[in-house]
Length: 459
Image (tube, rainbow, N blue to C red; front, top):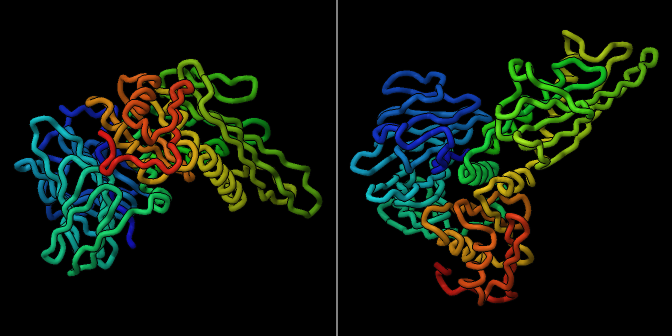
């Protein structure tokens, strides 16, 4: 199965609806190898702010992603190795994309008085929806899967139309009829691009906070150690949907170091700083023998205003050190090997921090409440809780947080306090919700064993 192409309604903090023309799609975020084509021209490197009109195309390479915004309520993300063509943009309220390979994640935000319909055309099916969330997955041979998360999607293939409800998917081969099945949530959430979109949805709900990666080097190392690790951390964070950037020389003019050797950058450059100290310990080289140095990093994500701790991680790797040669060689394969170890060290830290980082940031934002499901839960109970939370307020947003284990958690972004969220959960779901306890900005919900919500959930 080919890589995924996602279309997602995840409004970024730096993009206002009035800035995006309703008759075009605007590239608002990208990294890696992203190329755009206008009309019959060839593909060229895409630029942030570039617009796509009907007949234009966009594609991504390996380890690359891109996001488009259409009007004020439709957003498009491409995963790696994906390619789409724009066929219609807000013409009579209809937006249509053709996926050549890859997949689609669509989140259409409902706009009052604005008729919207989004269609995704693939070699096998056409998927159409209004005000919903779904994704498509297209393999190289044209086989297509359409996975629905909210609302309903009509999938047409071989002259047959099937309506796909939430938590179900339809799959069809080229020229074949679509067949329905249930989404396996555990398997689905293990997909990197699903987690990426979950991160984007949640971070959008709390204002898309910016993260500046500012690692420092202590002891016997040169600056390239921090740069290799920092760049890898930034890449990993961006793959998780964060607006992450590495520290630049101009950022360091007013920077200081704390007692642990960790760089402290002037506040307001970002909402959060990922800071840490890299230490490399090298034993004295024996005559004619290679030694194994040890590189260690202790990183922490802190708030920019008062440097309150959000999340931490520590990692360690062995360094291959040639005999009787100093660390940080300016040229040659020795330096490349050491830099590769330090890049991997940055990836280790990101993987360790990922499960907790998102939840900590969400709780840290003043207009967000996190709802955690504790104890065993039936998928029907979790779906009903999601529907209940989504109905709390018209101006709020509900987004499932990425799952890194069997647990489930949701973000409620709006004006309700944790106590109000807990009270509504008990009032509307008291027959199947056993408890809803608040701890700071977290509401912990447990279900009554065996108790199921009414068919269709609670609204």
